Image (cartoon, rainbow, N blue to C red; front, top):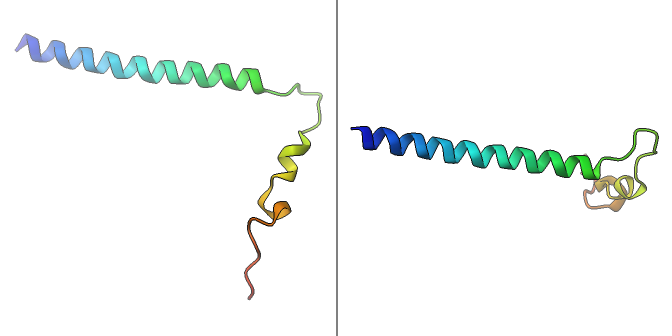
Length: 61
């Protein structure tokens, strides 16, 4: 009985550790890529909009 409980605790701890690592990694990546608050938005992001690139064409009505 104790062995099953211990296995469940280990599995739960492993999943929690993976989730925590993913969140920390995502936060670190966001901080590295964050633009300064005084800077204008990147021009590449506005040019990559689907409407600007023509990736999405308007549907005829």
